[in-house]
Length: 313
Image (tube, rainbow, N blue to C red):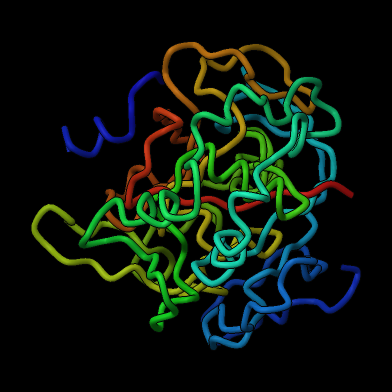
C-alpha cells in the first residue's frame, strides 16, 4: 500500500437531471441531481460525450455505509456530499490561474466540515507557486502530455494535469469546495454498498468504458475531453472518468487502512505522500479498480495526475 504510483508505472442542484440514457450505455441505479457551480461564468459548456454539458456540473452522492476496498475489514460511513461530474478541466482551471496568486487559500479553507484539522495549513503556502508566471510554468510539466496552454487552444474540455496536491487543494478551496476524502472517492467509485468492481459495474474494462492503457514511453497519447466514455463508463451517481483518464488526488495521506471509519480521513503523514485513485490514460487496466490505491509526493506535478472537487450539502 505504500508504493508510489510513479514507481508502479515506471517499474513503469436541485436543478436539472442528467439524461444518461444512450444506446448501449449503462443507466445508473440512481438518477443524480445536478448542480452547476458558482465560478463557471466564463466556462463554456463543452464537456461530456456530445460536448454540450456544463464542465462545472456536480451531482449528489447519497451517503451510507460500505466496505472500503470492497473488504469487510474496512467498514466506513460517508455522509451525503456532492462530487464533480467531471475532472477539473483546462478551461475551468483557467479561471483560477487568472486570479492567482491573490486567491491562494486562507488558513482553514477547503475543510471537510466533519473532519477537524482538514483545512488549509498556512505552512503549505511555500509549496504553492510564488506567482502566476511560476504557476503557468508548472503546468507545463511534460512537453508531450501537458493539457494546459497559456491561451485557449482547442482543449479547454480536457482534464487539467501537471497539478500538485497543493494546487488541487487550493483550486477546490477557491471553488468553494474541497478535495474528497479517500473514503468518499472510494464510495462514489464503488457505487456505495453495491461494491462494484469498477465504477460502471462488474463488466471488464474496455476502451468503450475508460481511457487507459497507452504506453506513453513509446506513444504520443492524446488525452480526451472529460466524459468521453459517458454514459457507459459513468459511476452510480453520474460521475465520469472515475476509472482512467487521470489519477485523482484525494485529501488523505496515503496510509494503511484501519478499523471502522465514519467521515474520516488520514491526516498524519506516514511517509508515502498523499493518496490518489482511479488509474490514468498512461497506466494499465489493473489500476482502474476502486480497490487500487497509491501515494505520491504532494509537491509532484505529473502528466497523469488530475483531480475533482467535493462539496457538502
